[in-house]
Image (cartoon, rainbow over all chains, first blue to last red; front, top):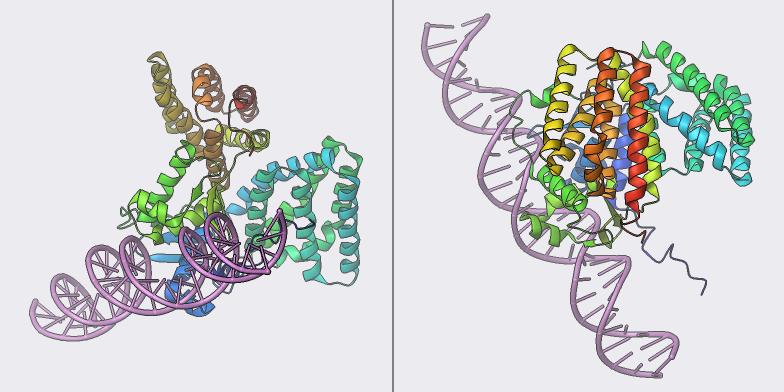
Length: 226
Length: 226
DNA sequence: TCCGGCAAAAGTGTATACGAAGAACAATTT
DNA sequence: AAATTGTTCTTCGTATACACTTTTGCCGGA
């Protein structure tokens, strides 16, 4: 029997609450809902065209992820990513993504490396076309892929969440730096391909330091802290 | 992350969903709900004596935290912490908690150090009394306190979540090691008090390595990976 | 005008009910 | 024995109700 488990379970049905959560996240990241803005359940329910229950469940997860703050009997407000936390985020990313790079170097299969190279090529091409949104997208894809190759689920899920917040804090500023950082990406993938964990970790560190420095420059124009 | 608004006014309520979530977490960690066990909403609602709504919201968060897996239209089952992830968890903890130790060393106020010393004393006392549960509790309290002193909210919240999972995977085994590890704790606090980041990081690393080694020994008797 | 208090409004927290649809399992038929 | 059908369980989304809390806005009085 060639029947797989994959569509055995109703896997293509995605619950409304997940759609609401995704929509809520992107709305917050894109700035449609501004930090400090009050998010009443009724309002969200109306915005997304659903009832209160899916909204409530999405809100609880969004709270756990740090996108909103829920005050008892007062409701939810969009969290305020004070620019002071940029340093905190990068400190954690530095620890986590360097580990990911090391593990990826030690475990990457040829197919994994090929996938990374493909992303690299697309990134170079998109950079030439000045397609900034696409570059940013590929940038995320590359890093996420490395996380995945590392094979450590904790690393992967934690860093993924961090990534969303990084994008939130300086949503456009980072895009402008992305082309510049592409050379560092090549170094990183080269190091991973070599299988040298130390070298990969070093390359990741260099990349993050550069990104961190750029982030601080762009941070000035960001949101004020509440 | 930590909004001061939270404890500003009238925040002593503690919504039911939070109580349910806490109860659910501890029930899973304590093994009252075993991995793979099916958790229907009605059943949980009855177990905790509440309606389905708080249960649903708690389940979504528990899913985000990795304690349960929710299959669309099938319901929630307790996640299976295969012992193979022990190494993954420790790899991440090593990166994170060493950073926490370093930051704590750099930022700890005298009051912070005093609080750590107090925990240390209580720990020594509890160890003499052979009060294992209390020792385990103080062990958690100490590490959590260091996380908090580090002042990095991301570090704190991520590591806190990891901690719960670590306790889950080898819930009793770790308790038996706890007395043995107390000497390492003293080294760690000493290093933090000295303000020497490198030394604190080193002490944290030594502690985690020892804990990791002990964990692997105890892991054999744990759950089988389903 | 400004202040204090009081009452209405808004909004969350919780419970309950109901219909729809998917998934699993049992029974029946071929 | 295999396939089909039917039943049951459960989630999913919706709707409604109500208690309680916080907020707001109004009103009268100084």
